[in-house]
Image (tube, rainbow, N blue to C red; front, side, top):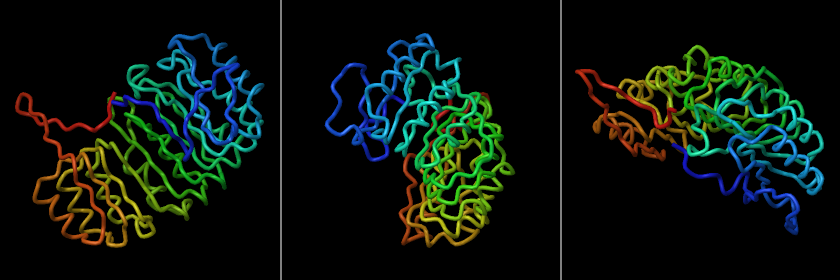
Length: 310
């Protein structure tokens, strides 16, 4: 459950845009937050807020934008079209976060998106793109030479999006975070869908790979263990999922991990013995095996859960 808004983004403090309010001395020194007040606001209200920002904040000074509530986010897709029009004027835009909503506003798996590809096309200098929620999310394979960080947080990430990410040519991408989620909330991505990401052919600069919040974490760990991309990573993050002893054993039996700076496995279902063996096997690596979980047992069956679902 996500309970707080981001207070900083892309290294900048977040400042809500309020029409008519005095601007900071340096409008480029903040990440501008765009959000309507009411959860059921009419689409015209968000469009009007964006128009006011375009009128009042010098377009060339906009470096980072955080989008919050746009009105009925639980069933109305984020208005990519008006953001694309604005982004063409924000020539200095370097960072964009779509859908910084907390659970009280809209659960992550209810956040509704559409095709975000036009935003990448409209922002060739964009370096950081964060997306929260994946209901209806679409992405077409593109080439983008500026993007350094891509983060998609979800309770269930479609396989079509995962494949598209892997098929994008992102020569500058340094960090990739994918919250894969569970099938009940649209997370139908398979290990095969991750093949292009794990090969890393289109991600030559990748140093931080996070395949988080995964229902099938053991199968992912088995695939990751022999993935070519691992050799160039500084950080490998398989946290927030249902990783068990089988997945951890595969990691230790696969390609060497001793070159990593950090291995993040927090929120896991490892036995104490296996968790300790992972730490012991990688003495020069910062290994996080905190937040161990215990399966729920009902009617003789065991149930495992990711950190983020609905």
